[in-house]
Length: 210
Length: 329
Image (cartoon, rainbow over all chains, first blue to last red; front, side):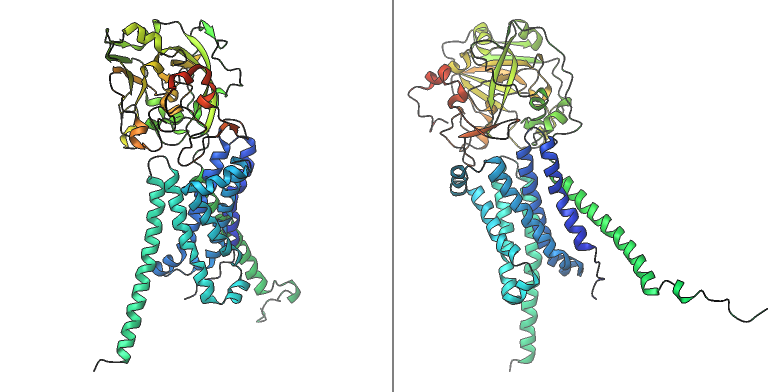
């Protein structure tokens, strides 16, 4: 059964999802982010990028497990919010933290694996954000569009690795997000397996062994 | 009595049913929109809120201490602007109280810096266990305004109060066998709740070579900004070695041992590829995950270049002549 339309859902998600970013922009200059505001902004934007990306990847598993259909309606908004925070995270790093010192940024990207994988995750998310419109789904055709958007899985893995490699000690928090991601993958994997088995059974039913 | 039904209002006054329903629908949707937006915003805000200054930060009124004999004008003092007291006491790494920078200020009130005893032993002529107030009464208090450079590439300027470690060591008479000084932090999960988690191998230990320990820059701090050392800054006694990364400055010291061998140090044990025994501030040697060439002074927007030995090269570079500080980092 299709869920009710809930026309407020996506606008509410967009407004709610962007408000922490607006808060940062207000709090930073006011000095409410503590003694190291740039570090605080980096941590918050990075964390929210990962959380929102995981939320977007949770839509399908939620449908599979609970038969909910409404998450599918908000997946695009969640994905775009994740990209917005990932881009903000990079901009805070490049502009505020490094002061656009190109040499230092390039050295970081090339030499420091945790920065390399973080940047790669942002690069992978960019074409997904660009092709998020209905027009692009039509232009690419759904199967190709869907294959392209599976890059979100890779970006999420890179995001978790970026987080794990960043912490000095105690990986509890990044491990938590890694566990959520693994659970989401497991649900999708189990579903794919079930589908394959069902297809095989259907084939077997049609062509009974002699 | 008439059987006629009461006159209906003219149709022009009747709200069309569709519109009537749409209005209710609109109000309902507006409510759901506001509720959902607020819930999403609140949830995300709470998730991301760490790392900001706690509004209810515990900044104890540590109390003024007696005037130091020398006050911030000695040969080693910097005249760079001092980092505000509020920042020095609410932005700390002290994993015994939590991993976030604001955790120590929030949670260090469980530490009891009095009564407190310090064990001095090992290769010394006069091993002893001494009460902190007695120990500090042996030496005149000095103010030293030092740069502090954290290995995480932020820095502060802090007016410490204390006495040179060398004076304490002279008093306990190191033997000819003494080559290093080893320090140990209190271990008591009741007072230091972060020790209930095995984030690091507790208790925190640190060490210096004897000549580093005897250097006049090396300070045992008991206060800052003219006040008693707040708990989150390592009350009642901490080490300050201004040409080394901040983590060498072990806090809340309960034991000072002179040893023949290089003592183990906590961060070196935790990640030997990232944190060496020497930990001299060195812009030429990167941390594996970030450059050390520049730093952010707390309160500044822009980075500044990091100086070799944190700007104390004239005083301490000779201690390392002949050493390859890329290997002995």
